[in-house]
Image 1 (cartoon, rainbow, N blue to C red):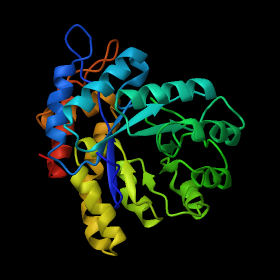
Image 2: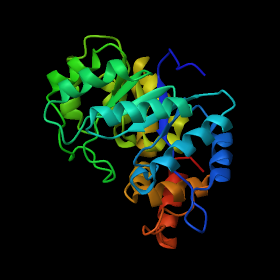
Image 3: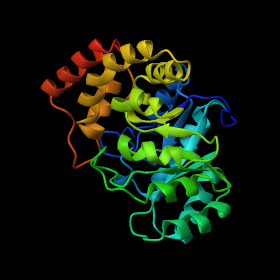
Image 4: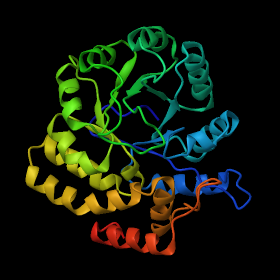
Length: 297
């Protein structure tokens, strides 16, 4: 499916289900995709912290893209995630992801390269798909506003303006990202990345989202952003207030929390990959209560 052209676009980093023997459960991935196809979710982000990317081999990551690509029946679109400070490896991995079925490549601002401008100027023209730059300097830690800043706001604005850059996924630091938004001179997509701040980021100009909460409440995220874009702040605030606790209780428990929430919605969540443990029964009830308050279940 072509990448959508109208805003808001809401995508979600897809969790990875595992079998009892700790191998990737491709049948469960297919079942989950079938359910997500019936939601307002715009696309799937694969190779992400929500998907436990650091616990997957490169072969497993590519096989997951192939499975989702086959299961989506030409619907929605796939964003493949790349996280390396090497120009050569970024290009190679991007090519492999596109070959496996990705229509877009999400690239993190590198954490081990001081000259991020040179990195992106070398990478972006050679990636065979539109690039989404993500400002996520502490992947796996589920850090928001406390995460380090990857580059000055002025520099990030220039990077977003590069040809073949589709847009930008902001960090959870609303104060910093408000300045970044002012340095973007094009009308390219500017996506928020956290469920707690959908309203706040929409108010400073975010017109899409890539976030964990999109797995469990894509409709709510879409409605908040749309309401802000249409000037109905009261309607947006009502929804935002309702979902805050659910987003917090789920994401505060990392991949285990996301998977528990999916289980409660009838998806195949399961346990995180070893050695990480699933949520306790008490934690699952906390998540259930928060999701009920958010009217997700």
